[in-house]
Image (tube, rainbow, N blue to C red):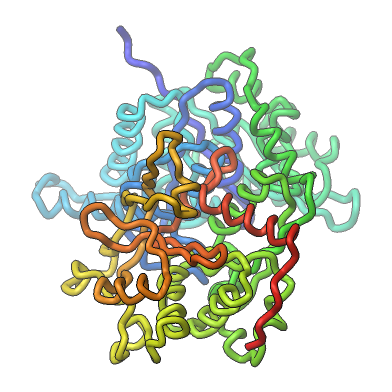
Length: 549
């Protein structure tokens, strides 16, 4: 039986960064998946890091973590949220990984007698990586997002690799995402797109499809110009307009008959109809929710760069849609709360409070003040990773009476190290890829909020969520915390690491895991759903009396 021929779709960006290649790639993948095709997205990033695990969120945005512990670009979160499937680490290709492979082989003597070069040695490694993934995954279509923009030195060799693959492997479509500015309403300029396309053509790649971001709907005249000057059929020039939510884009492309055109190019059945009913229903709930917006405060330290918390934001979007309510997010800089005498002045208007993950001492006391406010005023609270650790610190200080309790991450000399370094982290020297990473299972105690959220319908509850941390709740203090009323609702089955804690008196749940990383539009994170239900219930009952601080 002949081996199945995998199709390839390459998505490149031009003119400027930040146009949304990841959203376009995910939307195309969704349209294919909705027609029954198996799809696997790949992302190439030109930086020479092995992964993005040591990058600052202010510079790079969120570090996304996969089940296998691979730390990847935040676009992988978009892929998984659209496709509702978990991806393996070999879907992430970086310049660092590729150069490392070549240099390792050179040191082993595998290129004896040869001068090692970008072409063919580096390009061959990339081709082998992609072909192996296609073979292992047995995907009908591999989508390849090329990071950066056309003309960047750091992705030039990858573009060359795609040129070689297109010539040898065939069944490849090249999609260029571009930007069409308007100097004034109705005056769209296509020259930047024309120049960008020539740059791509000079690298030996002709786009089959051009997708245009713009401030207003692409005019027929602009489409004709792009078609004429870029050698692309007019029916293959598509709009990527401003939308209420990114989840609308598959539906927008579907209305433009995008699938029919891509199917013709890579030889798929262009008559197949999609199953997008569930997707349309959930998008509709985001665009026109049934109930009034839930106001949620995110108290973080990277709030100046919203992409640092993109998975947190999207998990809120998913869970709000699940309960058919609108959503308003208030971004609260934690370090600013440290300067406020009465945090109620900042937080009183919110229906729920969320403290996300993070590293470093800045803003820690502001987050603790927000957690204390939520507990004392019975405002629904959810904490993620650091949000769990600080929930424990706050409880230790203000309920257990352990004055000065802290994490040794922030105070190595604290008298009460209620949060401490994981035992296996004490001898770690290298920082890249050495945290407790990836999916970890936990056993959940019966009768808890967490058990209700993760109930499998058979009377038991387990969870497998993704982690990225070096510190844990100090086992020496667990008994003292539990004796004073803190609920430890989940622990790891082997290491006994505390995974989830809860308050008894009101809705307050925090997880050591980054549960936001596995939330998808069609399968929201279970504890986020419970959080949103609690926020709705609080609105119905009315808030408790505010305790001033």
